[in-house]
Image 1 (cartoon, rainbow, N blue to C red):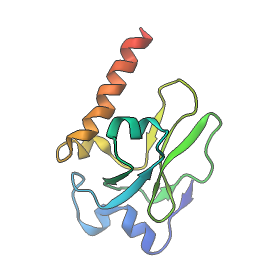
Image 2: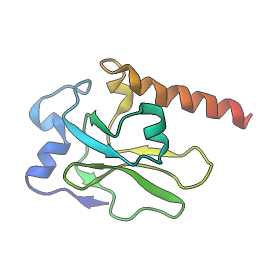
Image 3: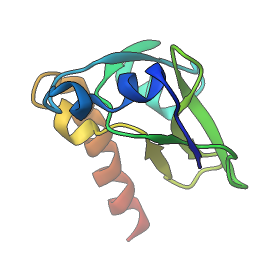
Length: 116
């Protein structure tokens, strides 16, 4: 992980601005061939943000699937068939104001059923 510096730290940590988590504060751009795009059916998506650090190196078997508008990785997922998702934001809080995020949790539930 590497630390965000300067104005970027404030942009990506909305508690610094006193904004609650159900409100989106910046946009991420999804790769069209990723699972996130399949679930959300949109290339540009608004997200909340609570992080002060960002991914510096992506681990083996993972790919970055979405980037912030200022160039930071915001979503990673498994490169293969395994259901692996990591975010730099909190989609569980976004569901309240944007029902599309519920598709992520539906997909997770379905993936767990397949693993049984």
